[in-house]
Length: 64
Image (tube, rainbow, N blue to C red; front, side, top):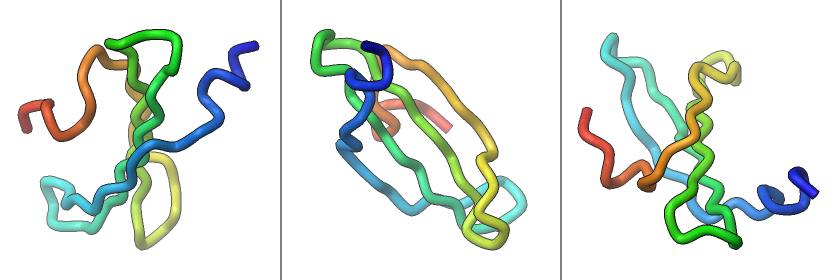
């Protein structure tokens, strides 16, 4: 069930790390909850996952 809930990505956004490296933020919204987002931050240079976060807000509403 869990993999089905988070299957559809809802947004991709370019961002920049504190050191200036380019990042991509992948946001997945839980369709069963109005306030549940899974965020993955991936480094564009190495394609490694830098952070994984479960949030009550989408990335665009989080402060830096």
